[in-house]
Image (tube, rainbow, N blue to C red; front, side):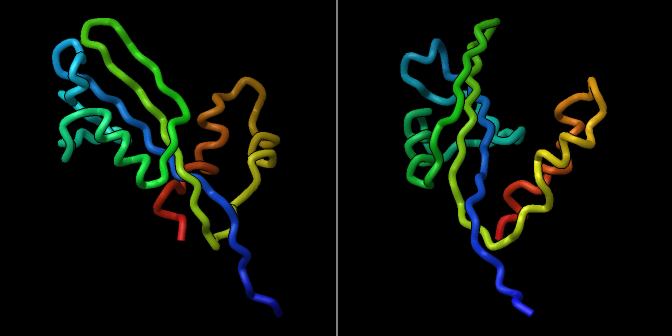
Length: 120
């Protein structure tokens, strides 16, 4: 019996929400949330923070700006990782089990909930 597990690519994602100090001209961070947790950054500016994440292998996937009241910036970053853990299932199998008109998030929540902790 062959018990070797092949390595495969997987992705880790980070969701960032940030509000900059003042009008944002200096790019200084006022409030920073990463994956829903408020954090105190070890760097002063958003440029420094994004450069740090880039040095950790993260690339920007999306960026958005909300302009009501205080400007709030939203970023999604990802990095590719190699894992030896096989996927729990297939996205197409999960979607085929979803009921017509169901919320996409509910239909595939279990498929994606493993997140970073499950990569080995």
